[in-house]
Length: 139
Length: 319
Image 1 (cartoon, chains in turn yellow, orange):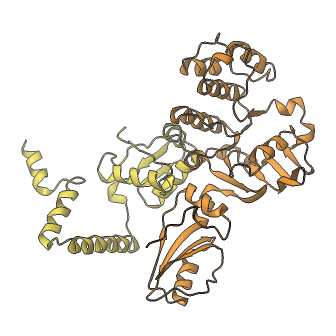
Image 2 (cartoon, helix red, strand yellow):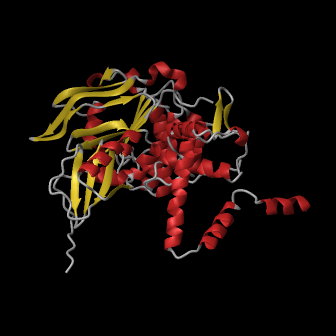
């Protein structure tokens, strides 16, 4: 089980949002792969010492985002990446957030090349670049 | 897996297990509890919050029939608090503020004494496991235990009968972080059994935020809010508006709790205003920009219960 969630109560960030964010991170990093089963609501609630309804709410939110699917009677599973759909609105939100980051970077005095390298380095923490993939295959 | 912990008992989900009707109690000429109308549905953990002296303990004692109301009434599990039968009492657990236990008894004697009140459902195995987990010897006398250990015994005594309704009056007052967490774990554990309900008061709002799914806010004896935690979290917000010049002198926006102003900014604490209303107001008063500041439950509680003309205790003047 590669799911380590750290809840920080009193931080101002709602607890269900912390669960959503961290499960989302684990999926994006590949720590949770398509088809992996998430812990049951009750198990995660007991483990994190948070209200079971909060976990249920986080799972519904992940489901609406298309990251997980619930099969009645058998549990909640990470959905197949190929079947995930992102609509235009999601992409727009993402674009706006990137704009904010680019503006901040430029205000810090970074150049276009610095920003590109920074982005690639961070991206490599989530997905392997074609170069890394090739090296891995050669081993 | 059932996604909603109580979905199997759908028909009891909306049932009210604790209800007060205009519950009022005077001490002399002062109302400690003033026309309290509280409803707690089955299956939730309800955080009962209020400042010192707000009336939490009095309200809890009234609900349990340990104090007589000056006016109004209350009921637990459908039974009037003034006439709780032994059969109803067996379904209710109560943890007092300060964990007052019989000092001369050993843990073992205390267990037997308590178990006699819950003949059918006392879980000796659970009690033994908890006492062992806390590394306490059952033959130790209560008077020789530390405050924290007494609280742990009290938690084990509260959970062993698996009460349908557990009421705890500030159970974690003065306890260290580890023992506080054990109380939270205990509440979560209990709530995951079908149809159990917990009402607890606390001043540690991060704890309330962590385990509660409902809250009731009492202020000067009156109920100020009773809703899901989520509703409260999204209802109370602080929005900062920035202006090109001085902010408008008159602030007329629905749900205004507090208003603080500086040269070019207005900081408003609002209840129940949604994004749309906030944006519409910002446009109407020609604000350059506005954003919602992040608040945790504690910030929200302080803003929500502060008097309208509140000033900071210490005013810092720039010279």
